[in-house]
Image 1 (cartoon, rainbow, N blue to C red):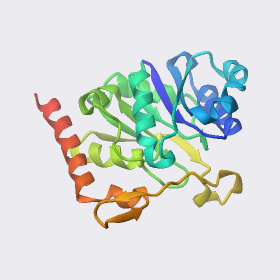
Image 2 (cartoon, one colour):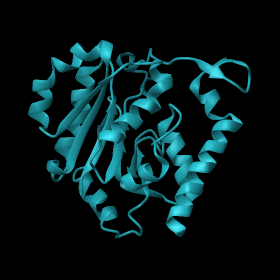
Image 3 (cartoon, helix red, strand yellow):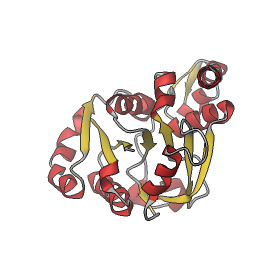
Length: 236
């Protein structure tokens, strides 16, 4: 079993290194972990200068460099890009402001891979110290292959949560615990996100943030279509 860490990051190399280190050091078998970084073209030098430090943490990493586009509003396209080069059985969405808290967390994922809790084609939702129950999902790669994407909205975690719930493949894994040092939770000024970008909202005919777009009838229909694809595959 291999787990691919999907980690878009921008202008925060120190946090990225801390996030990756927590995943590797807490793993029972670090060779099971593949780290995939998405870096914006205009931010390339910030990260490539730190590759030696990343190499000390894990040799099993890839760096995908591509244009930033609209920033946060296009986060899903960056995650989808990472999925396209991932080799793992599970695709683990991660943030550079998150750290793994559980020792041997990969052993628990391996149990799902072995089918100990049912069909391994599922979306595993780990626990979080802030109570957010679907912030860092592990998505079986077959789900990505069925859909042709991870998400179609910047709110990748909520997208796959709603799709997996509707398709009946979401599975809670409370033995794995993460800590998300997110600004709106911890008020840590170093974590303040300044890259949030407004996008066009066809429902209101104006510009609204990505969460407004997420709730349009068009995007709700796309999530229903995603869930139907999964259900059809599992029923075949």
